[in-house]
Image 1: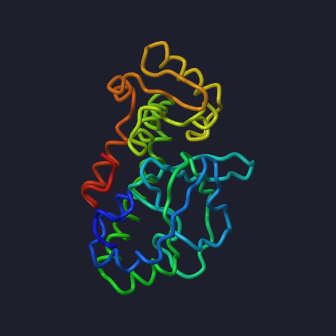
Image 2: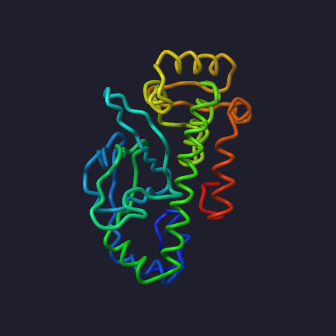
Image 3: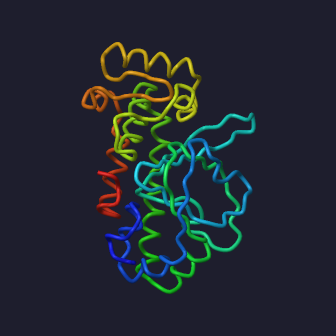
Length: 240
């Protein structure tokens, strides 16, 4: 059961050593989630860890005092959400929602903690992933402060492409605006310019990339910085 061939399509789970995977294999449960499903809201007790599989995608959103949501990071098959490094009572800090629906596996937080206690190599891998998660947050903060809306738009589309493995990114104008914490009119103007230049086209609820190289030229280098850190800390885990 713990062989690579039997593991679910989660890059993080497949990075575990054989014996380490066995520690949690029996406690894994399969779930299908729809786009827009809420996994956690602020204050919820985090009782289980979600591992997105294949193209499934999750987003962290910070809720402001005025009721506005700002998305901070995306998590796909390279990672997990919920109780990664903490133990005991785990109140969620932000909204965690499904950005692109599909398959997940879950594990009780208690089972993950028990595996950390029993295996130094298991604990080390999850600690390294937590470091990569923090790097994404740091990079997103810097990106929001110094890069243009056009650069950030291109970056978010590329980040979603990396994780879903498709040129068709499930994202509306409104969702993209939320990702960057700006008004919908700003992202609509940027997307219209991308369409005019033949970089992408839009369909109902999705953005279809037509020229990935041109999109990369419009993007900042934040994605590449995050990838480089993943490769240094957890080589082979970030989606290729």
